[in-house]
Image (cartoon, rainbow, N blue to C red):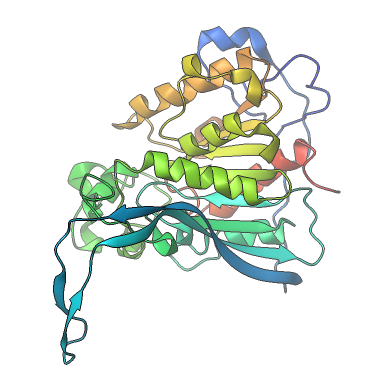
Length: 372
């Protein structure tokens, strides 16, 4: 049964039906007293191809602070293979903690607010631009759906730049192998991985092509386990720079950052679409009522019984239950509950990525976030 968790009195204003079936809210029993069944509403529509009417394209860096290093020995470095050896002074002042964002603004946007795409762990904003098999990604989808779209690289990813370590961050970066991506992103069982793409054995019906694993690996970026404070501060600066609230579509590791940012600055967030989140703030340590006016959609794929995903969902479901109890609007889009199987952790890269995005777009429209 498809259901919605909402605060009293908003069901008539927030019709969140997606397609011909309702959203399934599979939250713990504590939240079920808040559950209401919805009346069907139109789903999102697949954007039509054609030229985009763009008003401007630009980018900026935001956030960060100056950190000073002292007491380190100078380095003797040959900067090019045939160049002279140079003495590099390592001590000095460094910018640390900044992030990068690129925007594409439409000439006539149909959405009421900008849409931000926040990436997950070990990835950058490139994951939203195109799929590993060469199709247009969700950046293009949501532009064609009428949104001004911002794609960002968080601190220590992509164009946001690395920090020095162990002087700035105390630990070494974590690198993700092809096998780790295969297993953790639920492309197939651990014993189904092979270096030869033709010999890989994915989960039955998996919608991520095994032959595209190397393409995904090409965009992998090392990440730190000790950078959360810097990342959170940069996202706060990012939202503060915006002149109006934004819709945040966020994946995996980024979900916890988005939820915390919304709690800290609820006036800067119009809605959150949490795609396969791996963590969330502890409701016991925050004022959940601060998010009661920010609708939250949680999106999940298939094969969620595989480790470590049951443990990841505990924090997400706990947060959702607390937000519903505080009077917030919380909805669950579980693809398998709609009869759509085979989606992996990388829903934006699966072969039905446009179908998933269309359902998300329908939900955004149902929240009154589109002009027409």
